[in-house]
Image 1 (cartoon, helix red, strand yellow):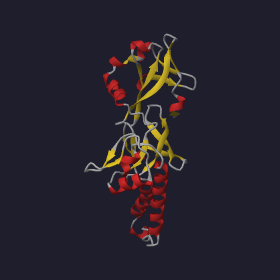
Image 2 (cartoon, rainbow, N blue to C red):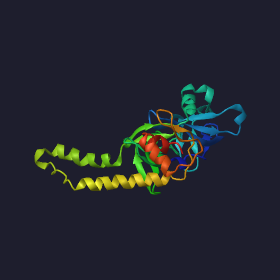
Image 3 (cartoon, rainbow, N blue to C red):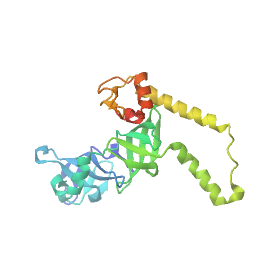
Image 4 (spheres, rainbow, N blue to C red):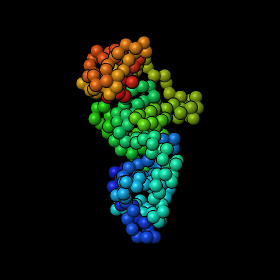
Length: 245
């Protein structure tokens, strides 16, 4: 498995010709498959258009170089219409905000790990607290241009013991959780909301956000204050606000 940092910047070498074809510059993501479909190759001839190396054409992905069978493995964008569409879509994954299914901003993706076929195995996420976590792609619902939608961590954590109880039969079913657990859950949610609020305060909105009836919550370039956050929450626009900084 490789991280993007282990792939980008490597020279692309043709085995049959023994020549360098360029340098891997960026990743082309197929969001539907959750995989790297190709690499953009910089051959120093930008004036002739971008070149692409389909991930399936890679013969070897080493520490010092990426090898291909021949120079023909690297193709112009015009010669690969399917890859051109993915390139135009601009889904980068790295740098995208991570949003849970329940509408909470969890952090930002700083790195991805892929297998030998280009499949994304996990995403490295910097949480609002600054902590680094790894989210497996099994938790990912959607890869989009600016955001990645994932299953809530709490839901994922509780699913396994519940499934085990069903498999073991009624005799092994755990006792009902005590009512006292609810305040702890509420406290956890409050702490997460506090992190989101602190993360947003002082940031600038990158676009104008309005309520459904046209009342301005914040102008483009406006500072996000406590008042703005409260307006967004009351109008059901808090997630939109969180994704617009």
